Picture 1 (tube, one colour):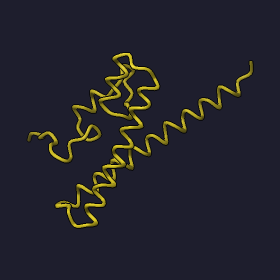
Picture 2 (picture 1 turned 135 degrees about the vertical axis):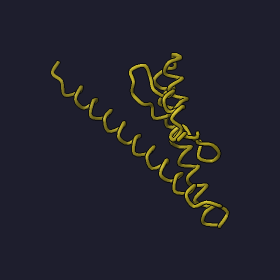
Picture 3 (picture 1 turned 180 degrees about the vertical axis):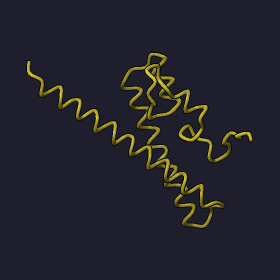
Picture 4 (picture 1 turned 90 degrees about the horizontal axis):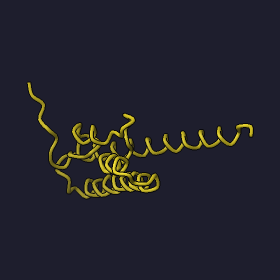
Length: 116
């Protein structure tokens, strides 16, 4: 049994294992922005650039989910599962962004509470 690659509307860095593997940075942790941030991190991009790209990717997923939801509401979507997949991708990306933010704030608070 062979596994076929994901193509068409469902081909996104979040779901494609080939690009998801490319999104891993040298430390072996996943990047929130997918393949573009992984490339920026290894090509010497600044932290601000990587963070900006990650937030742009999350914003793009949210906008895409919103557009597909509007199309579904107007009856212009052929497959309802495309709507659900798009909404779930946006939800997961937002949850990951919030988790990273919370960890950053916790680290900042811990550092600020260290005695000098």
